[in-house]
Image (cartoon, rainbow, N blue to C red; front, top):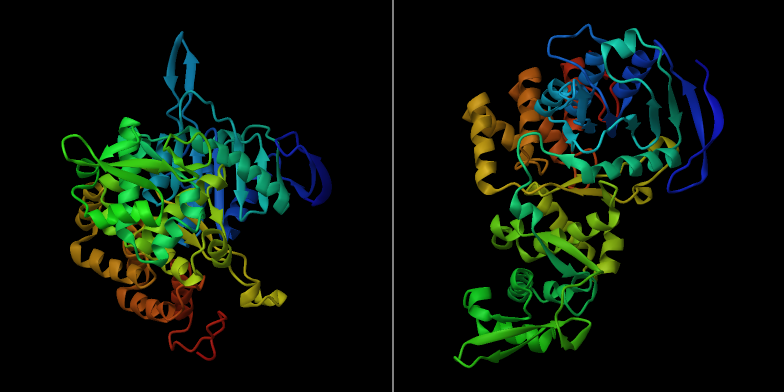
Length: 493
């Protein structure tokens, strides 16, 4: 196979030509070539596949080897996201859902891969893979034994960052069609409260509240907006909306921030009147543009009570930035950029984002420095962030109990302690990963490797499960522990 440079004209939203390096992997070359690319993945793998027909125990099936490569990539710390078809199949005058991907779904899900079925009304006919934001594999081949061993299929590897980003955006559009395989999306995740962007971006409002440590005003205003979303009335009884919040908080929202007015009704009960932030002479109305959406689960799951003010602000900013980034799955911004946009110092943002990561509300991908090319710490790209779907406290507790039932309370507690050392103590999948690592390398060795990695600063990209596994592998090769931190070479045996 020979790599050939070519110009690809893309008929897509970008409607422009890009340059890619192309390698043909048609026919029997596909399986081996794709397996090699998956095994070399360092950061992320995205897959959209019409048919991934694999079953447990079919190790000789080339399609199984590809699915297994995804699971192994997840185990070594690569982010893996898979979309599978679940469309209706026609036959014998009846329609039935495509169940051919069910086993693959279960296998990937149990291995910690983020895998989603596309809702039945959309037929996902893609056979698309994007690796590390640079490598695209596309063609006609499904991941089935017949496709890989019998059919005549056409496929190619296309390398180019610009082209890969186009394909990632295309794949990101699938998010709106994802569906749970077992249950509908919960009401509290579907119901949203609209909040004007200016609440976060205008230094008169939320930024000032954070700077002045005025969490009471922050909480009350969001509660009033939630109440407004229920009844669409700008005049709200304060007792009903805020549970007897003291008058000084109401006065702050009126006098200090200009977000409300207040009065006493005919019965002597206090009421507040929500005002338009951009025109305080008008009552508040539902924004038709310039807003972000907060799920009512924020209140129903108790985040409004659990989070501190800086964490709440970082969480709201994350929701807003995530919506701006769509259809991308991740949003990216430097601490300096966040500070300038939202009028909050960089340290406050760094603290808030780290804390919501600790609570498993957000996933962070720390950018790395390519020392071989002379890059310094200052040359790093901004970190990338992705909000996680909220899970109710009761459901989370059940998941922890199930984990303890599978592996034992003592082993789960130990693994959770290791995960906490890298800010992942509330991430159930991370704890599962540590349990597997403990079973492979032994608890004492894991403890030693975690101690090495935990010394890195919080923003260091090496402070990760992936790097801990790397340390363990070097420890295995060098029993005397005499290895270089930046190399796999033993100093002596």
